[in-house]
Length: 125
Image (cartoon, rainbow, N blue to C red; front, side, top):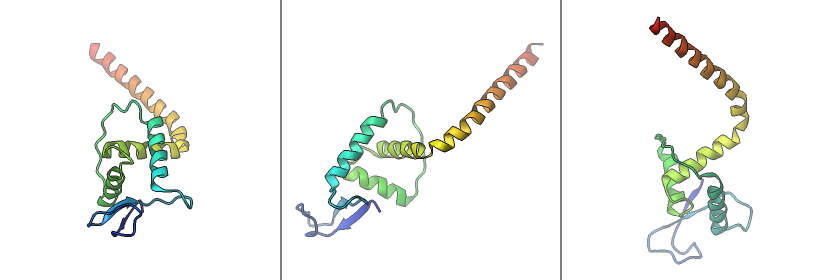
């Protein structure tokens, strides 16, 4: 799980009276939150330029809690940035799927265009 709640006194930082939320990720022994955050931010800078498209989506409470945890610890600036990062990572992880399906998608698009042209010719006759 990306998020672990640690009670006051169990973190090295000064904790407020209430529980302090910190990011706890699976990582090599000795790697701390700051190093993880730096890696995530560097990766974000590489892949999220040109995000001009808006996509609305519904998330489970569990997924949203994890996204919010990363925003809270400032690994991401916003929910949108975090979602874009994970969508991009998912697409990259399944490049094989897209490589397989894209030729078929291209053929479908070509056939749709041919059908539209046929229909428009039929209207003018």
